[in-house]
Image (cartoon, rainbow, N blue to C red):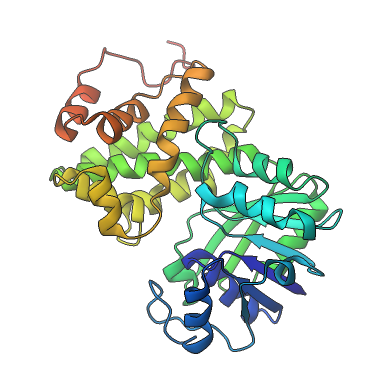
Length: 334
């Protein structure tokens, strides 16, 4: 298959490596000329992907028209803040029915659109799918066994994408629940910031387990209210992605939270991590969605206070623990 990956960050590059190893004709696009030249000149040295190398068959380009035309699949791997602008640039080159799978995670601040909403708006007529799951680029690029889920409007499209990506170390499941997959993948980054903060404050496994468990409860409440399926939040893009993002040293969201727990400001933490910290960009949108759909999300509320209003991180944890008494699941009857 002729496949393009739009976005040459760590995740896009890891997927380009995977696709090339699957025997596909792969093109990798970046908006940054220095990034293009670095990958062309030194494919065996990839920043932030130690031990990985880009197969020489992968064509690296900054020509967006070349990356979009005559492709059987386009993989959209642009960081969430840049999805709309990049999709708008792609629009003249996208044919009717073009299959596109978005692999970035986030919610647009302001309009509160999911990334598939943005792509459907900017690229009308395209067949938009999503892929998410517990999948650090650092591990996928080295062939470490990984599972993800593809969501699409038709089973045919989901199966088509599944076949293109799947191999002996990269297993793909399919699902019709696009909104649930996207919300799980986006909102877990906010919870991962909280888990990192708890680590930075010196709290233990009990605290992190509590944040993760109550975090997936918050994500599920909002997700179901927005049309997602409860089964999705107990799956790969729900608890699976939440677990890996809250616990791994690869996680930029967990690492940024850790630094905030150590006393860094949000801006200082993002600069130190030196990669896009999606949870910071999604936190405001998550809180706005919670208010729009009248859903209780106390962890998300406290993270917003820490990130944007200067609240002390230790006080935020204390306030979470000292909230009014509650039953764990309101749906369970005595």
